[in-house]
Image (cartoon, rainbow, N blue to C red; front, side, top):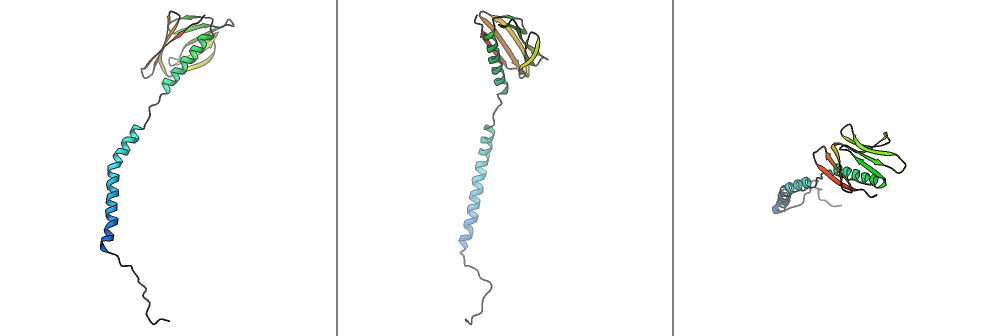
Length: 150
């Protein structure tokens, strides 16, 4: 056995300039974060999206209306109601309901909601078809002319 006394406290010798390395690296990291965080906030804000729900639902309404006009044998137009004569001697009406919804009824029975959250619905007879105007609750105006084929 060794006659040397065992030392319980052991440490490694380090140079004084090695301690500054971690401090400088932390300052560099903080600087990079301080510069890049405002750009990250701008990117996150620009990535937010606007909802096109109203536009899509109105486009879908126009498609439903076009399909109904295509299967109709004749039509009549009033400013707020569209009457479509169907092949089975029934009449489909498309009108506003409670002022904010568009519904379809057959022979004044039933209740199919085609569109919701609107401000106004107007029908106008034009040569060879029907011009439909929908005003959304945000005030946006959507207009579509649907051609009637006999």
